Image 1 (cartoon, rainbow, N blue to C red):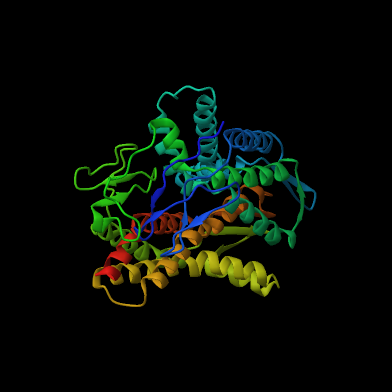
Image 2 (cartoon, rainbow, N blue to C red):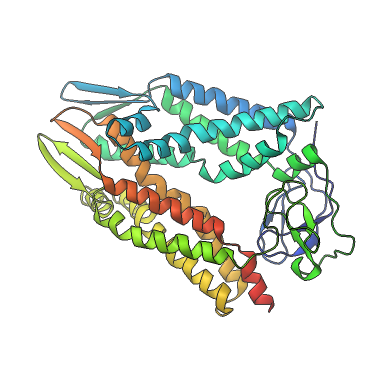
Length: 413
């Protein structure tokens, strides 16, 4: 069964351009001729494939949770953990917020995403309309940015390289299962098209009769819903009639929310870099470690590729996001600067890399759970990692609040 979209008109979510979207063959994608944004919709992924990938991902996740994940041994002392211990250990050290963040982004939200995907597509495949379909479809869109199982896998690899110089490690059967789960989850997310699902749930939404391709939707009194891809007449509707999302049209007031989040992130970035993110104990001696100190230690021990990854993901990316989004907000307000296309490319880069700053958070979580050998060797979290996690969350929220269509509205003026 295939719920491919039938609409021939589409509105770009990044530049508001109206265009004719041809029906695509399997494996084909369409890009906006104005800004080169990859357009959603018209995908030919069958519902059976969606069900297969989501089911396989859940099976791999169940295996990853049930079996040992990794073992640590130093001078005869051995400690084995499961995946959930990376979050539970943080609760044991009275860091409930951080434990909840790790548990939510690696297990709870991905599980919810896959279960909702299975339920909606499974019921639709039987020819019935799912109960609560609209609420659940909106939930899928909201969950997607916070699914970070792939970032967690990279964090595990970084942690292992850190530990190998101090002790021996042994991978359990849960590790390859978790890696397979992360890959299958990414496949499920990349092949999912919200517009196709919304068409199956609520039917197509006819665009305004006078809407013509080749110009921005806003100049024609229309807008493309960024949640379900419907094209809406903004003169008579302020909410999408299909998914209920508000606002639809580009809203300059969203810049205020972006500024507020950026200012908060910028203020917290200073203590996040200054305070230790974890405290290590070795042979009874304790030493605090900051984000910068961790990267420097890796560099001194010869692990410069990992040091470069940590330095980029944990130091350059957070402050780079704050500066880049701040500059984009200024350009959107003042209407000056380089071309709209260059600014949009910067926004896409910021949006794509922001989640990878969680790398250090996952490294601390894994080391806290794994390195527990009493006074011989122990790792515990420090308040700096909580501040750092909040900075990453704030910068991600700021990127979500920023509307890239405002860049092109200024350019048009």
